[in-house]
Length: 299
Image (cartoon, rainbow, N blue to C red; front, side, top):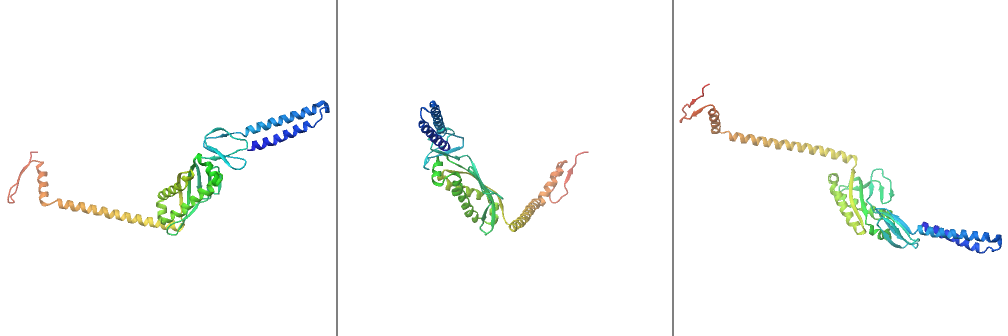
């Protein structure tokens, strides 16, 4: 569009130069002034055509889409393939980044929009127990190239899509999902919360051509009193688990000892005694409690 405006200005100057040259008398200065004026006018008109030509082509990089908008503001087309493309000089091409972009909410983050990416401060959520927590969250998304003209018609540029669609969707999900978890579960079930947030945003955005690639909850910061309480609870639970483990081990050992005692009956002990002696020679077992006669091997 800028080249088109320049070409119009130069063209007007060329026309004015042409009219002004035509008004000069042919006899004045042997017509040299008139000829020079026509040359200037012709040069300006040629430049106007060249500038208009520059405005009729544009280059598109991989990972970009262009929304084509006429001078009246109407959307007249879109392109999402890389390379050189042609258009009318009075049509402007608005660039959209359809690569993977990130929206990050982190500690100390300032609101900023660069291309298709954005940053902001931590998100504050409330759990089922009424406890507030600050969450660092990053969302990675992309846009389908053939949907950029629809998004432009509905919301405006890519930054408007972030502020009007993506950010409100994230904040809504983070208000309604963590509140179903207890204070401790928010920490212990982070992956589950991530999955629920991603699934919800995917359902909301897919009809618009916005693809949610990933949702990552990086850090959850709870009040200091809650941290200390959780630490004490975890220590107490660890102690309980340790005592349970010791009790189970004691039961196992007692069961083993009882089994051994049961197995070592007088008959079994006598048999083991006989087997031990038999290894050294042979044994004759007598009845009625008589003294057995043993033959021992010679030394």
